[in-house]
Image (tube, rainbow, N blue to C red; front, side):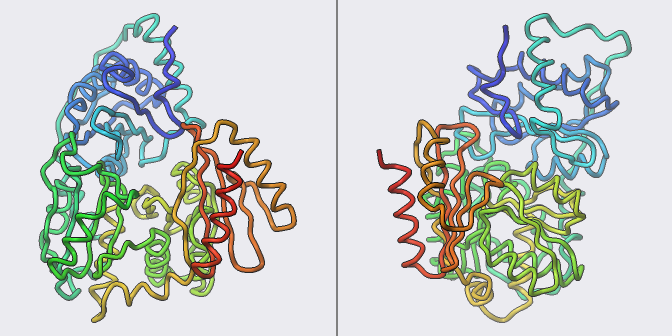
Length: 452
């Protein structure tokens, strides 16, 4: 009996190629996805990993074998795939393993209009049918097979991204270092930045799925070192780093300092609230408390959600929120079909800085009044027992269990511990009013997590 549980995750498909994910599995998933959507046409795109060619072709074979036409957008970032799904109003499949090492690949699926597909919204059904197809064979389709056509989406994507961030043409000239990490930003950044008043200094723009320079995972500070050094060396105004499929963006300021994604969330929320006063802003529960405070001060309504793009997107749709941000560098926009885009976050940062005469660090100083720990992972065999122990230890303080355990103190600090969906890990995030408070709480909780 086939079992795809190791590669069908909470939000996408991801695994080692070819041991866990291969063309036969991709073909079965393509057929299952086509049948699940009931669509007459779907769109696909892929990142720069060599295995993506065979996997996307096999997926298309599975879909066309069920009578569904496939629009192949070729190489692209994940947000280009979301753009294509939204613009064409068809379901989509993006072949990427995001920031994972070179031997991995995967598939991110969405319905028409870039609506997410996760375990609770179809991925479990698609997995079950694909497993059946692998065991019994894909049933023949009585009608006419679908066709594969190729459509270039990059120029339209680039124009649309700039259209969503008004005022870019009027900003002062900025010197910007971009580290594409040999990922898809190497393709999309030149197209989007073309015509903007930006002096672009490029790092690792060559598309190379072996990632010869560093992992395309900007959430790890080690992978930002080259960008930080280049910003200082070139006296640049800021630096931008993208992950492999370019749906996440991280920023460093003119001094090479890493800007926490919560600070970008607050900055973009402020811009969007100026554009659409009184709007709702979504933030996940480990975003800085500064975000809801700033949103309320500007007349907006903050809504707190669980961690994960499917929860953010669902709340965006439910509330009509104009914008949402996560600590992981994902940023979501209503006019972008509620989908996430690292490129739009980058453009908002350029626009915000370019309309001032000062530095990025000065611009962002008012958006970062608290001190975060960053996410700290610990290997734990029984995460449920550990969380129960921590809950008992802090029983006298405010607690909630929206996602893991969040403990809030009247002294101004809070922390969240939550289990990984895919690994035996507990993830800890702490924030305090100052460095000393944050460090004390961080060390106390880590002692509980890692102690016997």
